[in-house]
Image (cartoon, rainbow, N blue to C red):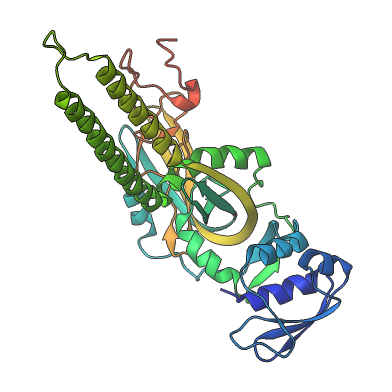
Length: 376
């Protein structure tokens, strides 16, 4: 990962500033008007990023004001990038690639055959989202999704090596977007539909430790409320029992019941406030889109169900060294086990192929939506 000094120098240079590195860990900047206004710095200035500062330098750190200023300078630069990576393929496909396909997909009511393994070229779409979780505290994080635009396969194994390679210059070139053998690039609407379906379960998994921490703090606060109001309630009962009886030999319960009712209503209100305090609002905002063109080994397969057949493929990318997993045609999440529908041979994961709760008939959610055709 690049340092704040390197990021700042590159950003200022793109914005038209003249930047010169100085020791120790500093920059000397001649800033145009746009840079001066965004970062609140004079026309000539020195910036320091280390423990020891250059003479007359202003200390710079990852503070909100400085980061916001850099964002204003960057604006939309780099939010959408198309790049091409030189071939990662060897002369022959990896050994046992066809056998790996058999381990990647299990069809409960159909079978498949491997037709061919051949080199091909595809596009990967790397989507970077900024997560903002607002609860009793605010947490920010990033999450990446990578999808193969040729077959909608989710390429989780590509994310880490691709992010690592982004910091290198060797082998990269700007893509011109042409090429007859490349799949058609996804539209913005399809990217939105894909993200809406695939992102929520991944966010939930990413935030599991955060949610567990909030639940522990909430349980602790609820226990304190229970202990406090239980003591109030018991104290009110003891006070009532200690009062002298009236001449008729009975105590007036009106005041006691009113106080106990007040304690109970306050307890219920405090519980509601505590649950609201720890309710989490999660926002995912798309920050960057990278469309990568790269060569892959493509495994073509034919799915057979009764007298019908359907062709699809797996891709093996040398950058990740892993074979992709096909997605469910309904929810687009990866699965290993599929049920094949009878109408269009759609691949459905177990969650999307569950029977109708009314009639018990299994139906395809791609062909018929969420309504069972027999019950509709």
